[in-house]
Length: 287
View 1 (cartoon, one colour):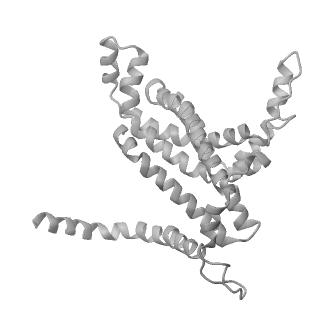
View 2: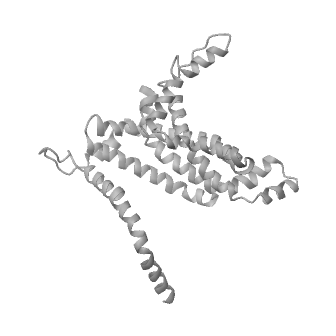
View 3: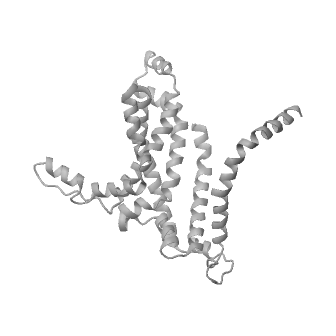
């Protein structure tokens, strides 16, 4: 009873400090989500005197039309591929930052890592368009240095979409892995090496298991938004960039069919939550 009273007293003392955050979450997240959930069960938007009624047709369209399932599978595959590339690129970079570099060199590399956060998303995407198109920066640089002519035109292709998304989201993997790698005591690594463990064995049996929480957190921060992304696929992919997120954007922007767009959005949310619930025991055990 005393413990319960102390817990209630602590919560009451912390409530004034928690109230702004909970108020912001309610206004900025839960209210818009509630409105979109309400729209997803409507036949039309209740604007300009339009007639509307409650219906389940928006959700049945997701299950009855195979196109949505195909695009959703393509988006899930894209999210998994981008996440894997972010691990391959981000984890070694985080290790070098945490255990190899010191002083100003670390600060300089950190600046390059977080630089994408300081630029507009559209600027990053159009910058890649200038690099990847035929006659662009990459094509011109290669032809200037090679004795033979090559044509590099990756625009409006699946690899261009992957490159743009990896560039946008790899900092999440670097930062989350850096925090967990920084917390690993260097004496543990030195002890493993002094006991005869090779660099590969130390990495596989010591460093990666201890840094697993950062890997899991980074993977979640990358996979979830990539599955619903639409800017990079739209601009860099062209026709090859038609994914589930671009179809949702079309419903809101081009077709102005907000009820269907809301239903497709909640279907995506449900699928992502199911995937996270299915893999959470494995991730929790790994972490």
